[in-house]
Amino acid sequence: QIATVNPKQEGTSSKRGEMVMVGSFTRWCLLSLVASVASAGWVAPDEEHLQTRTWMAFPAHWDAAKLDAVQGDVCKVAKTIAKHQPVSMLVESAHKDTAATLCGSTVDLVEVDIDDLWARDTAPVFVLDGGKLGAVDFNFNGWGGKQEHSYDAKVAAFVAGEAGAELITTWLTLEGGGLEVDGEGTAIVTESCVLNSNRNKDATKEDVEKELDKLLGIKKVIWLPGVKGMDITDGHTDFYAEPYRPPAQRPRLPPTNIRQRPQVCCGVRRLLCGKWVGCCAELRKPCLGPSRPDAARGALPRPCGGERRRGRDLCGGGDGALLHYA
Image (cartoon, rainbow, N blue to C red; front, top):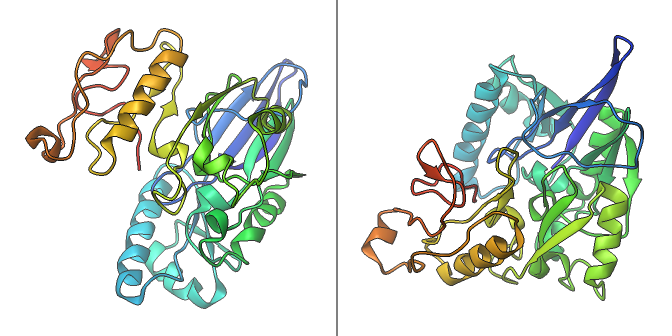
C-alpha cells in the first residue's frame, strides 16, 4: 500500500514528511505525516493522514472484452483525484498514448513495464523513521503464483527509487491488501494469506510478527483466519476490516450480508469485537445469509452495540458508511 515520503524541515521545531501511498483504482492512499519525535525505528503510518499524491497503475493485460472499460474507469478515478492532489500513473510504453488520451494532462504518467493494475499489492509499503523515508519490498509473487508477475515483482523497487526512499528488503512475502495497520503499532492480517505455503512456507506466527515489528513497527498483530482459495488473494485483510483513527479506536468491520460466505464475515466480526478494546460488547442480531430478502437488497443489520457517530454504529453501522470492503 504504499509509497513515498520526501522529508522537509519546516522552521526549527518540527519535521514534516510527505508520504505518498500507492493504491489501486479501487482504493488510493496518499499520506502527509508530521513527525516530531526522535528516530525509533521504521513505522508504517495509517491511511487517514492528509494526502499529497496518489500512485496508480494503468491496466494493460486484461481480457480484450473488458480492457477498454477498465482503462476508462481507472482514468476517470485518476482525473477525479487529480482535481485535489497530484496523481502518478505507472504505464507501459505501448499504452502510454492511450493513457495520455484517457487520463488527460492532469495525471503524471510514469513509464515502466507492469503486469497488472493492482498497485496496492505490487508497490512497496512506505515507512518512516524520524525524517527518513523507507520502502519495504514484500516480494510480490502474483498472489502465490496465480498469475504472471515478472514485471510486477520489480514494481516495489522501481517506485522506491522514483520516490527516493531507502529500499528495505525482507524474506516475508505479503501484499499491501493483506495488511491493515492503525499507525499506532497494531496490524490485522489473515492466516490464509500470510501463512499460506504459496507465500511463506513453514513460517510461524511468531516469525511473521517479529518481522513486521522490525519492518513496520508493529507491536500487536490480530490474526484473522481468512479463507484459503476463496479468491486470488487467499483472503486479503482489506476484504474484512480496516482500522480507523480516534476518537474511537475500533476497526471497520465487514458487513454480514456478503453474497458469498456470510458466515466467514460473521466470524471475523466476532473475533475483532473480542480483540479490539471498547468495540462491540455483543452481537445483537444474527448474521444474514444470501437467501434473506434484506441481504439481497443490500441492507446491513446493526449487530454491534456501543457509541454512535452521526447516527451510525461505529462497529458496523446500518448503512455501511464506516465499512471498507472489496
